[in-house]
Length: 415
Ligand SMILES: Cc1cc2nc3c(=O)[nH]c(=O)nc-3n(C[C@H](O)[C@H](O)[C@H](O)COP(=O)(O)OP(=O)(O)OC[C@H]3O[C@@H](n4cnc5c(N)ncnc54)[C@H](O)[C@@H]3O)c2cc1C
Image (cartoon, rainbow, N blue to C red; front, side, top):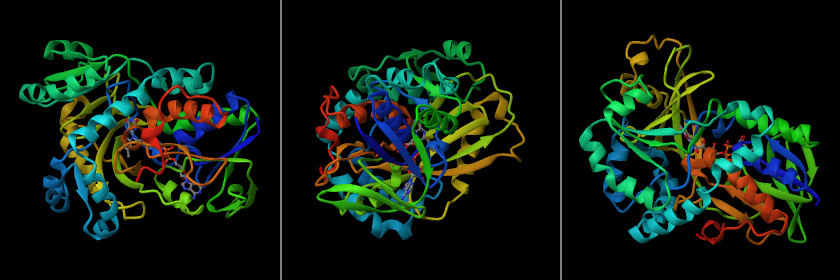
């Protein structure tokens, strides 16, 4: 079947390489970091199912923009110094956030989200990566009964898209997860969701598996791509030249920079997110929970109890603002009995760059104008969820087979 070079060894790139091997290709993964050290390092670890997708913003967003500029503690912020560079993405997003656009995106994403768990089963089964997959569902949690009632529209929309979900009373929630305090009176339970206990080690284990199967992993910073006769023939890096037969770009939030190396413009930007992790907290929490109002996921990881979330528009190279991580902690530590009065002296903070297109759909498919090259990036808040599923789809299209879903909503040249 030939050789495929994959740029980016995050969850998307590593999964692409592994599925490509399963369909008979040889692979090389290239990343400037070790596998799983980009955005795939520090996410909230939820592997959602069909219909439980993130709701893209609607027309209300325009009204909210001043608050994003001035409220440094808000769950979504825009950095002033980034505003000018951010304008083309922001304009494209606001232009395409009508209710009809949102519905189209929700339907396309729902098709993509079908089979996320099965794709993970296929890639991790009988390998060491399986140890990092948890199969006991996830929760969406609420601060008040009123808030739970007010969010009924989201649950109805998710149900219409095929979400399997159960509304939990306070009593049922206490029985399922006794760790929550009175600050969490209601929840919705997604029994089909998976999660990971360590997204970085999961990614690394999948990348390691590609080596076991005869593939290569090269640590190098990609600086250029040689194009001859309309197709890539070499990847240029700080470690030299790497000849290319076929190429997949899965460089997360930096994929627009890599695409530009081939003269292709992609309107990708980043929704930066933060996490704070408290090590050695003995918690009874047994599955992840997303607090919708706080835009924060809580997940007991192998490395500690992680609180991850928020959105910051400040570009891939803007200075990190650790206070955003501490702000997640200040607002969320009261949700669990174990963290109400825990010593946070040894907490660690992290920032990661979610790759996001203006319509919140990823790019999956052929690179426009360049043959033997495919794109797989822009998975926003759902990159962990969609990592294995994307790998499965990419392996099908690189092999010239029908992936079984319409990829038109995910074309690279839609903007
Ligand atoms: C706070 C937070 C919480 C999240 N929670 C969840 C969640 O619960 N569930 C979920 O599904 N998703 C979640 N996400 C989103 C998810 O983490 C991302 O969508 C996903 O990690 C993207 O994976 P990726 O492989 O595309 O990118 P990455 O993991 O960033 O991988 C891209 C790789 O490309 C490499 N690269 C880039 N440019 C070059 C170059 N020029 N040369 C060499 N290498 C290069 C980078 O070093 C990087 O390793 C969350 C994100 C954040 C920030």
